[in-house]
Amino acid sequence: MLSACNPKTDMSKEIQSKVDAFVEVELTTDVSHLSEKEKQMLPLLFEAAQIIDGIFWSQAYGDKEEFLSEIEDDATLAFAKINYGPWERLKDNKPFIDGYGKKPLGANFYPTDMTREEFDAFESDNKTSLYSVIRRSADGSLVSIPYSEVYKEQHNKLAELIRKAAELAEDEGLKNYLNLKAEALLTDDYLASDMAWMDMKTNNIDFIVGPTENYEDMLFNYKTAHEAFILVKDIEWSQRLSHFAALLPELQESLPVAKQYKAEVPGSDSDLGVYDAIYYAGDCNAGSKTIAINLPNDPIVHVEKGSRKLQLKNSMQYKFDKIVVPISKVVIAEEQRKHVKFEAFFENTMFHEVAHGLGIKNTINNSGTVRQALKEAYSPIEENKADILGLFMVTKLAEMGELGEKDLMDNYVTFMTGIFRSVRFGAASAHGKANMVRFYYFQEKGAF
View 1 (tube, rainbow, N blue to C red):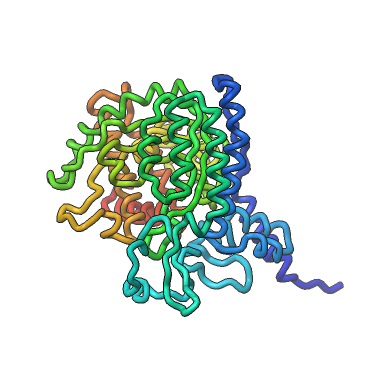
View 2 (cartoon, rainbow, N blue to C red; view 1 turned 135 degrees about the vertical axis):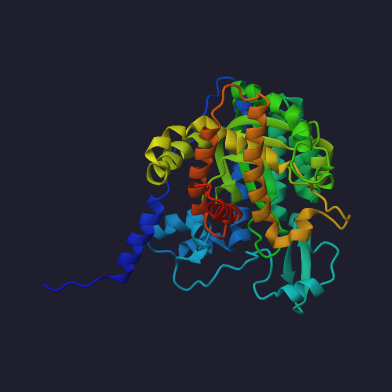
């Protein structure tokens, strides 16, 4: 009896193993503290988030429906949905479907045949806008089109749903934010809604929605991708963390750098909160899932109001239990595994997000923002800064007596374990790059 390998079957098995590497969890939370109107808001937010998901598909790949309809086996279909396209995000965007080449660095924000030189020579007032795509006109020249025009139908529907949710909002801060966010989607001006989001202090529900992060644009780090989080506040944990926000100016002053690199004083309205995530859509749902949020990204908001750092406690607990602990059993010496603790993982993650708000956002020679100066190198450098500075802050706060009885080895060993968790994001990820740089630096200095 003769048998032979079937390449398609082998490939399907390989893809299935990649799908199985993702642990399925159910995102739940306690909603007993939500009012009836707050509960009625949730279906509207879910519907809006699904629209956001569709927009991100077009930004990351292009025509979602046509692409998915051509996939024949279930494993590849599932993996394509996880990655929002034919490129494996945790493997440096390597294509996993035959017929696809390397993922364009600019995703679908720019023409795939556009060169950097062509973009630099392109004269346009808003070509570097966070909220526009670059396309070719009929004569082949480049043109910059605002998101509010490119996604007009979707943004109109989003604004309608968000305004309906605002009508149900009993918290005035949330109501104001939702109304301003709806307006921003129609005008491409997000400053007012970002300011309003910073002013929210007593909301039980949070809805982060719209073009937010620029990781997907690996060409210039200009263009922001659409995403949505639906979050429910953990009141008890949020209250426990609120006092850290008042310490931000003091922490900024304590940074071990020259004075000109800490001249910007973080806004006093900075906020720390703990939430449970009940829905991810778009950019934040692609590949691995985030466990903390530090927004807004606008340096104007940072200077005037600071930023909000939201810890997604249920997602964080899942990642710790399902990923960090198993990794520690492989890479950490047995006698030190006792130091791998969720509380330390929580603190390290929280102060990573706090650290994004420290340092400077504008160049010291008044030539623009740090983001503009570093271009495509900005994201991995910024993530590295936040990781190291976050660990510095944990140490500093422990010395100040702000963290109670504390064994810093818990944070250090858990941090080291976390490097092995994050390098799995791959070289296509700013976080993955940052962790590899740090790993080799620690190795060079004999930290392990």
